[in-house]
Image (spheres, helix red, strand yellow):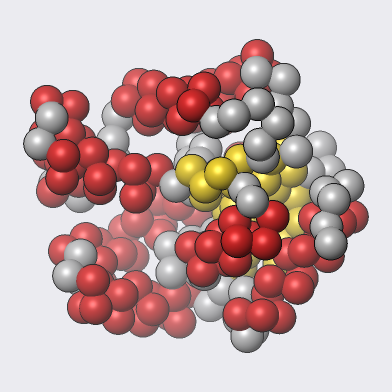
Length: 193
């Protein structure tokens, strides 16, 4: 079974994803990292992706779905995937659900909730440390968070109505958050050791 991680930027998804990948052997699919690598590649598609990132715009739906579908195809059969930050809106959810169904992949979701101001401070710090321009502008960060709440929250609620979402308080120590996620996974039927 695959796992979807939801939460606002700076909410600790990346940290928890890394721990889950190490512990359970998930293949990690995080669109932001994939697109940053593509932007740096210098290919034609990479240049197109870079133009959206540099403007602070979202990468178009068609490109996101093409890249995600290719990533799923590249994963060896039976290996679980951790989706970090996708789907983000209703259009992505529609195509994501269709792709997952056609591949016979079942999934459950974990939503990590955190204090927004704390998350912003984390992102600004990360932006300084990693030199990421998109993480150094507070107004832009707030805009992204607003977009996430407006577009992604309805998706989470749809999955929640199916009984597929566990909400975890992310305003705790990293290991405590990890333990809560693993407990939720166990309730969903993941094989946890």
